[in-house]
Image (cartoon, rainbow, N blue to C red; front, side, top):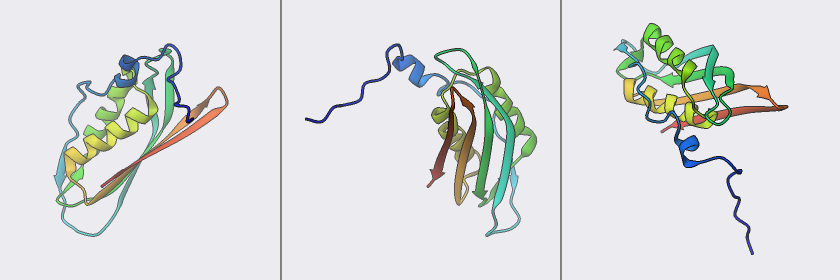
Amino acid sequence: MKRRSQPRRGYTATHAKSGLLAKLPDIETWPNQYKGYEITIEIPEYTAICPKTGLPDFGTIRLRYMPDKACLELKSLKLYIHAYRNLGIFYENAVNRILQDLVSSCRPVWAVVTGEFTARGGLHSTIEAKYP
């Protein structure tokens, strides 16, 4: 008989969904002039709040994408990422939400968002989400 894993005691659906529907600043774009190249943006000062413990999370977010008709505007991207500072959201949800918002903003040919998070309790997490 196969055992199904159970969520850790005390974690709720509210914790799991925390931050997913939060209003964040728009990521603006500008018209791309070229085709067939990649852009990598590294954000080494990502911070958010663990929705369960209320403790701060730290990490580096790396965006890699191939623009189609639009490129991400960096100042608005910075404001968008800084809005996570007071947001309760799990690592996994943050990386997937960032990818979702990046794709919604600039409609790239492809995109990868990687979150490398500072060790906590001896565990280091790297989360990666891809489009398409």
